Amino acid sequence: MSTVEYIRYLIPESDRDAFTAAYRQAAVPLASSPYCVDYELTESVDEPGAYILRIRWTSVQGHLEGFRRSPEFAAFFAAIKPYVEAIQEMRHYADTGVSGRGPQSEPPSLYDYLGGAAALERLTRAFYAHVADDEILAPVFAGMDGEHPQHVALFLGEVFGGPPAYSAERGGHPHMVSRHFGRAITERQRRRWVALLQDTADEVGLPDDPEFRAAFTGYLEWGTRMATMFSAPDAPRVLQTPMPQWGWGLTPPYHPEP
Image (tube, rainbow, N blue to C red; front, top):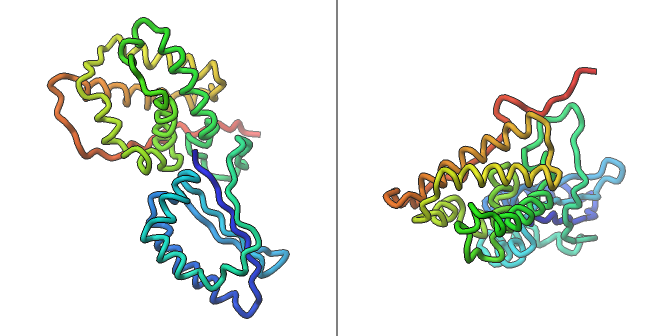
């Protein structure tokens, strides 16, 4: 699950220009790290010299064990090292599921709109619990890894515009494709997978407005048809394929006119 790190600084007026310049330099290796989702450095309007650096990481583990052990961290730290003693707070924070956007903002990603990582984990846990008792799908997932629901939640999150955690931790779309080689998924199984996931989305309370469900179902149809194709006995072994990126298409969320 992605995490947000907040680092709070208090910088004397004489050092502020050099501080922001250092972070412009540090931003280069930070932005190139596969463990960094996004970042932002802001300065208080009410208390000049009070800065907050916000970094969203793919996970706490990705930050501490991935980024901190990478060459990107060495370059990042070299740039900001003079300001370490000015840090007032440095903590990781987890999403609570309480979020939103004002009416003047750009449409949120499907990931944010459906409720983020917590909502997707509820969805996949409930879905695969049903799969185990489903006569059509249970044979497909016999011997399923106990962490499979979490992996699928990461994958769907990245597809729908969330953090690239699946790519960083599992190997991206090529890895997902490889998990379907030789499974010979039937059309009946594919259709059942889509129908059961849609039913589970209702069960766990995913948004049910027409615009979201059109985009959500659009990906399920595309993704399952691709999985069926890759699972065929004579399918080519695709080793390089980009991660799908799914958005609203032609139907962003509906806002009635006042």
